[in-house]
Image (cartoon, rainbow, N blue to C red; front, side, top):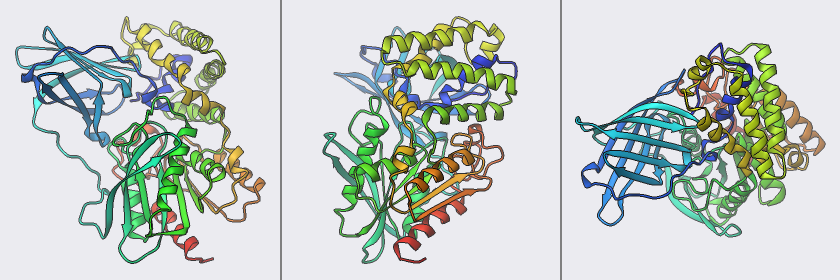
Length: 493
C-alpha cells in the first residue's frame, strides 16, 4: 500500500515514506498471538472501502467462517488489485469488537459492531491508521481488465505441482500448452518482489496471466507459479531471499524438462523486475536454461537501484531537488544501517534515522502522510522491520552484474522508457556492459517508448498510475517477447 507525499512534507520524511514503494509489504509482519472463539452469526462476507491518502479507494472483502471447535477464521479479497484469498492469521471477536490480523501484509483491522450490524473501525498498516467500515454483503463482485483472457482457450491448461527437493517444498502452478503434437519451446515465469501469485496479480491487473495467454497462443508452453508460501505453494515467503526464489525457479525449469511436450533444447526463463535479476542467477549457478528474457531486470546493485528509484518517484510526486537530495542522505544512512552485521545494532540505527525524520516534521505534515497524532511510534516500528529483513539486506548487497558477466546464453532485455522503479537508461547501460564482459554473442536490448515498470502505456510512469491504467501489458511488449523467442527457437537470424 502506498501514498503520495504532500508538497510540504519535510525532505527526510518524504523519502522514508517511500520505503513502502520499495519493499514488499510482506516484509512487515505484525502478528498478535491468540484467538478467541467467534460467533456463528458473523459468518459471511463483509465489505468496505479503504481510502488511501492521495491515492485510490480500495474495496476490501472479508470472508468470515465459523467453526464450533476453532471459532472464527477468515480470508480477505482486494478485488481492484486482483488478489483473493489472502490469509487472515488471527480472528478475534470479544465484547462486540472484531480484530483481524494479516501477518503477510503487516496489517490489522479493529472494529466495533454497532446497532446497525456494521463494524466501525480502522485499518493499521506500515504505521498508518485509516478509517474502515465493514458491512454485510453478498459475495464479492468479480473484477477484470480488458486484456484479461476468457475461456474457451485455444490451448491446453493444466494445474500442476512440482518439488523443490533441496528446499523440501512443493510448488504449485499452471502449465499452458499449445495445441498440437509439439515439442514446443517453453518458459517459466519469475515474479517481481513481494508475495505474488502465479498471475502476478496487483492493482487490479494480472500481467502474467496476460503474458502466458499471449505466449501460448504464439506456440510457446508457459509455466507460471505461485511464489513459495503464496496461494497453493508450500514454504515460507517471509524468511526467504532472492537466492531461495532462484532455487524455486530452477525447480520450475527442471519440471519443464520432464514434460514430453517441451522441446529439451528450448527451455527459458522470463523474469520481471526482481525476477529479471533472478533469471541470470539461475542460468549461471543451476544451469539447464537455454535463454532468458529480462523484463525491467536490474543491472545495478541494490543500494544504487533503490537510491535512483526513490529519487525518481519523489520527483514524480512533486518533491523539489533540495528535498530529493536531503532525502537521499537519509536513505543512505538507512542503507548503511541495514548492512550492519549485528541485528540489534541495525534496528537501533534505523530507528534513530526515522525518529530524526519525525522530529523535523510538524503535525500537519505527519497527518498529510497518514500518521495520526499519537501514531508516530507505530509508524517507526512498522518501518523499522526492514532492518530485520534478510531479503532486504541481501537485496541491498547484491550486484546483478556478478551473474550477468558470466551469462553465455541468448538474452532479450526489455525496459520501459518511463519506468521509475528500474530506470531504463542507467540499468540498460549497466546490463549491456556486464553482458559485453561476458562476451555474450546473442544479446538484444530494447527500451520501449512510453511504457512504465509494468509495461503499460503510461503518462508519467509513477506507481500511482498503475491501477488507473486499463491496459495490463502493452501489445508492443508482448509481441517483442513472443517474436524473439519464436525466432530464436526456430533458428531464424
